[in-house]
Length: 159
Image 1 (cartoon, one colour):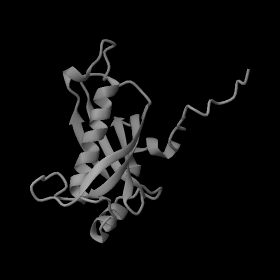
Image 2 (image 1 turned 180 degrees about the vertical axis):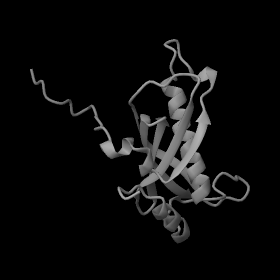
Image 3 (image 1 turned 30 degrees about the vertical axis):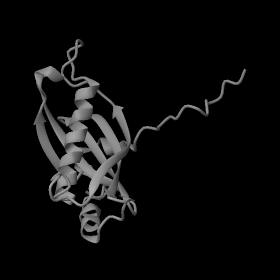
Image 4 (image 1 turned 135 degrees about the vertical axis):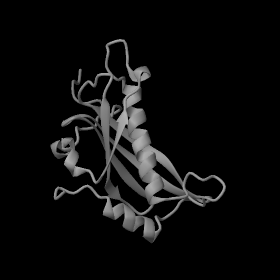
């Protein structure tokens, strides 16, 4: 019997250790954890942490593509292609979570929003989300002005 990796299962390696440093990220926003985010073990549950990652991504999307969530005027939409979340530490309630985001990669029609959640200096979770820009015909190239804004928010080791 073969005990090697199963080709039907995908595994994702941990992000680079530098991603655990809050200073790496260009955009930060503190969010109070809610009592309802706590599980029976007394810490914030994984769904609550993913919700914080999602809110952080949405805030970034609105910053880069200002009308993307206005259904009456938008001509472009953003959809999620892939989400990879790493849960690194427990976080208690009550707490204030520092949400952080930067751009991990910019492609022709997609980009990677790389988020981190921090409790003090401790990184509690990391997430990378591939987001695809769509128009009425499907995936569409990222406009030059939005591409420039994305590039300004790139994760770099020099922050």
